[in-house]
Each structure stands twice: as C-alpha cells, then as structure tokens.
Length: 366
Image (tube, rainbow, N blue to C red; front, side, top):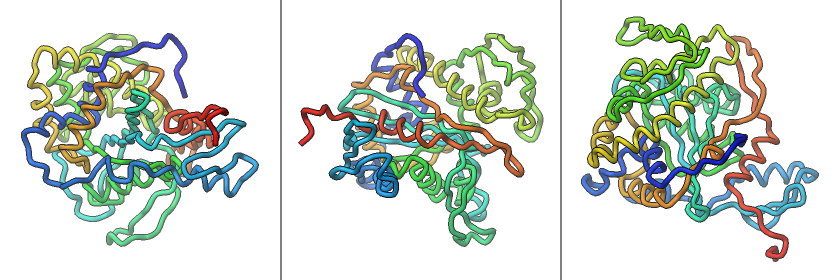
C-alpha cells in the first residue's frame, strides 16, 4: 500500500546503500573475486511474466481479460509486464552464527524478515515490498527424514525451515513467495542470518531510531544469555551491537499482531540505515569491501558477483522514494497455535500491477 505524504526523492547513492544492505554488499567485490557460480542469477528467465496473474483470469473471466503473452486487461485498463524488471528476495533468518547446513531438511531456520526488491531500469525506480512472516500461503514441506511431503498452507516464514538452511531453504522460500505473488518470477535471493545485522550496523557507525511502544520491554537471547536494553517509548537512541539485533529481532508473541509491528520496525530501521550507510561510504570508500567481508560468512545467495556488479551499476541510475516502500494489506486471524496473516487478494493483485506492470495507453494497443 502506498504511503501518503510528500514524496521524498533520494539520490542514486542511496539506492546503492540500500542494495549494500539488502543484496549488493558483495557487489564491490565483483572486480576482485572470481565468479565461482558461472553465468546465472538475475538474468536467467528475466522476461517470464507471472503465470498466476493470467491463470486467475482464465478461471474467473469476469475479473479481467487475458490478452497476448505478458498482457492483460483489468478494470478497463490494459497492462503489460515489465520484462526488464529484476526482482530480488531478501530473507532475514532467525539463526545465530555463520550460515551452515542444518542436520536435516526440517530445521533450516525461519525467515523472520522478508522483502521483495523490484529494480526497474526502464522506469529508473526501486520498489521494496515488506512481507509479514505470518503470511499464509502454499509452501513445500518435508518430513523429519527430509523426504518431500507435498505442499500445505502455512506461514511463509516456515518455508525456509523446510530445507538445508542454505540453498534448498532459500529456493523453497523463493518458490513460496513466487506462488504468493501469482507466479511472479524471482531472479535472485539473498539470505542473511539476522545476527550479522549487528555487525553491519556497527560497520556504518550505528543507526539512530526512535523506540516504538512495541519495542519497550525487549528481551532476547544472545549467546545463551538474556539481553534487555531497557528502552522507553519515544526515546531516540543510536543502535549499536546487541541493540541493533534486538531492535529488528524482538517481538512479544503474547501480544496481538506482534509480527506486523516488528515488520514496521524493520522498515523503520531500513529507512534509518540508508542515509547512515551513505555517509559512511562517503567517509570510507573501501567500506563496501568491509561490509562484504563482514557479511559473507553469514549469507547465502544465488546472485553471482558479476551479476551483483551489474545490478549495482543499474541501481545507481535509479531513484527510490518512501512511497515506493510497500506493505501487504490483509487481515490477521488467530490460528490454532499462532497468528495468521491473510493478504487481501484484490489489493495484492493491484499492487503487482502497480509495481511490476505498466499501463498501456489506449492509443498504443494493437
């Protein structure tokens, strides 16, 4: 959903800083390190349109009309999929320590932070969509022996748990997000164990935020010990080390809609991180290399270093404004054990059209 208010444009270097944190912190190393994975990543299958968008109209023609490949008509307007758009998935994983394989395909860690990043080189924009970890959608599941057990509807954060904690977990999550977004192609993923955020946070000099009500009483486990920052609502603090990890990680599961509140906190942190990273890079031109070395042991990605370099090059020509930071609309319900978030299907469909499609003027329709 678009945020109301004055549009605030951020310069190109801000986009690079955003990608440094979310997907491109390894981009600067592209010229120094060999490409170990070959030619793959975001370029693969980039032109494929979301199949589910068209399948929906095939099943419900009263909702809209299917035109030629990649085009559809909805509420009297014609849309075409942006075939050059690059969609990346960022995952923040609730694991501590370096990224390593789990012992089975049943305990890969949950994706407590999920953001889709849409890089539109033609429109020269970057859009970021926050996805609640409680979002109910179809996910692939495995039994305790690691054997595939089909699919079921569950919280999207659990898709990462059903995997090896590395590539398989990321692929399972990317597939779940793609299904949620009507078959939207996801061209690359980047997963980061959330403990590493504290290291990246400190590398840019800390991040200043205002403590919201839901973060008061924060209490997390770090190194097998409880940590309590003792924040007060409305207090302005510069997050360092354990405080940064606590700010993005904590939620009170006894409070209603705590996952949604945490997602808003994570978005607030991202807004504050970007300008801080920009200033830090201006003062230290080798900071991107430092960030890469810091994050590498904690991250899993299928984006090649060369692809990351090209993405960063494209990103610096784009603009990002806060109105391009979205959240899914929907309803939170009490499940048997935990809260469940059910997206508004119409709102989601229209968000996809807004970000990933372009309207074709009537005079240009063949």
